[in-house]
Image 1 (tube, helix red, strand yellow):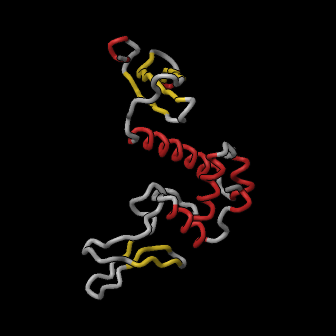
Image 2: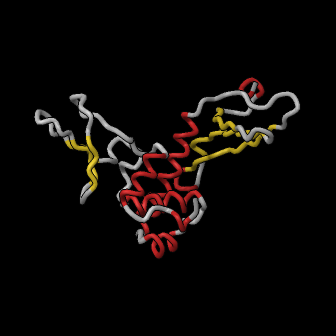
Length: 180
């Protein structure tokens, strides 16, 4: 996929997001009825059971729930973010996004990545005859960027050169007992 063949319609963007499991392909109402997706001025799931008639926005319950972009722009923003092409100027000029939306979108994408890494199943990587590159980073936070350090978090990450498998873990300190 490249920038030139990204979706150009809301329907195409929704289909792409569903294929990549960002949006659900089907939804059930609170009564357990299968809902139908309607794409119009509002994109929503509707329950067609006469006794129910519930409506739920397509974004509800997804990580796109707080993004206020149309689906075409959201897909383009996500693509550009993954390619590190999301300066405020670029997003304003090329995607029609304002400053605050761009900043919020970048912060949100970082949160999605952290959430994904935290949910990932931790497993051992490497083994005899394989090379695992390991790196460490210390993240600190100071109140108003001055004074004493309030919080320190160590992050260790590793990448197996041969298989491409990786890990990322947070640890309270670098003591030998912690790391073994």
